[in-house]
Image (cartoon, rainbow, N blue to C red; front, side):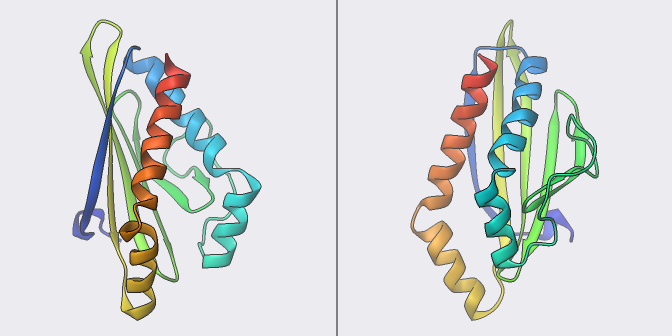
Amino acid sequence: MRISSLPYIDEHTTDIAAGVDDVWRSLGRTLDRSFSRPGAAGYARLVGCPDRTASGPRPLAEGSTFPGFRVVAAVPGRELILEGSHRFSSYALIFRLEHVGPYHSRLRAESRAVFPGRAGGLYRRLVIGTGGHAIGMRRLLSAIRDRAE
């Protein structure tokens, strides 16, 4: 899958009162914790994700997985790119980290996805159209920020 070919969905941003190294560690730990819960593994199995368990190097690096996602690129302190797929969608989640000032960072989370076919269109309406995806992303960024600060 070429991530650049996936349609843009949205981007969420949070400012964090912590340095980029602390935010980077928080990002990896929070993703691992959030997506490695039993419910996430069950959901990944239900929709047919190829990556259904946490595996690979920790801290997160290229090749690491957790339910629904595989790390395709990791530049510590700068960028983490995740991709995944299942029966209804192929998607990517791109985290970009910026140094803003002493003990001040900005974390951006960009979502891209394609939802092929009628079933994919229905899934998109359920996940994106209801606002559920946006709520989940805001909660995830808040958890990363809280852990880093």
